[in-house]
Image (tube, rainbow, N blue to C red; front, side, top):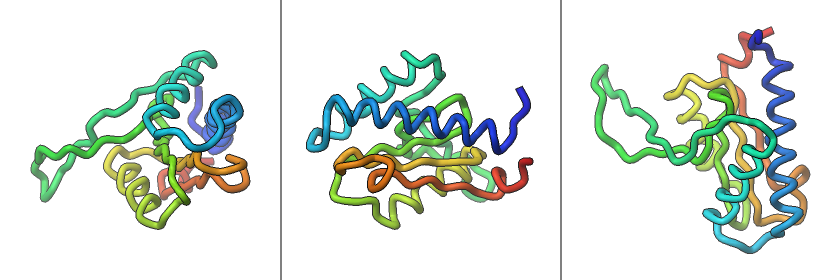
Length: 136
């Protein structure tokens, strides 16, 4: 498998499909942890590999420091997925995902907010960085 923008974009589409499926069955109004359990179950049903609630290594001035930074979900070792169940996606959520992408050297991140009426129109934000931009 060659890593391309198309591959990452196709994977993004599949990830959002999982979120839509979960939202279709549960709707808005539940806790983030409930959506996360169902979301990772859906990823597994569709044959995607994932890790959830893993530590993000913090390297400060060349030294690893113990910090309790954790991402929500990493799909196929490529895309960071931050799950929310709140009023809206805030700029700080984008900053957090961009930081995780940088620290983990991942090309793309997705913020998914289940507390909305429509995931595609109101409940997701996709972020890319220079790693993604350098791909063909």
